[in-house]
Image (cartoon, rainbow, N blue to C red):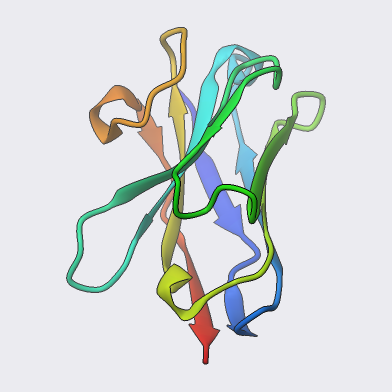
Length: 124
């Protein structure tokens, strides 16, 4: 069982940056693939980025590629999402998720554990 707690959200102007953090509990964190998803008002939760258990593989949604960077520190049970060049359309609640099975996935159903989310608001 893993518990995930996101932090780092807030209000930022377009073009600005934010760094989201996800703190994970549990001894198996280093074996989980991790992901970030987001959900804007009135929209479905969508995939943002994912990272393998070792950090050696990552994958991004086209909408955030070259602007966002996912990383992890297994010694601290932490996952991060560095978000640069933010746009108003990036406004959403951002969720951290953990997947027990191997490989990378963009599917919400593949993830076993979820955090409560952190709000990111980008003003124009």
